[in-house]
Picture 1: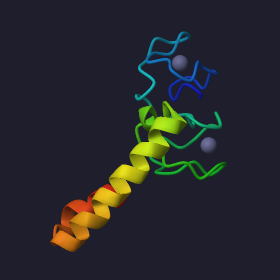
Picture 2 (picture 1 turned 90 degrees about the vertical axis):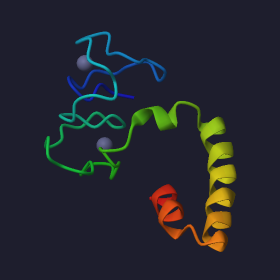
Picture 3 (picture 1 turned 135 degrees about the vertical axis):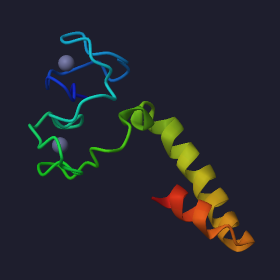
Picture 4 (picture 1 turned 60 degrees about the vertical axis):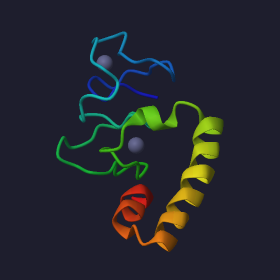
Length: 93
Ligand SMILES: [Zn+2]
Ligand SMILES: [Zn+2]
């Protein structure tokens, strides 16, 4: 991934940028996925389509994230059935 403050390439699990010291979840000047410069007010990266508002920590482990996605996805569908549509919609978004 890339620092969202200075755009330097970082270790996938780094919590802080080793170049500028800013937390990897902070800043919005560069895309955390492809490293392209982005507008600070942009919601998505125009180069790769990544949601810049999303916390990059979610992608720490693709396997864990995938498993969590399956569990949370099933959980979300359960909530739909139970009528908790608001919570389910938040989870899906
Ligand atoms: Zn940095
Ligand atoms: Zn990007």
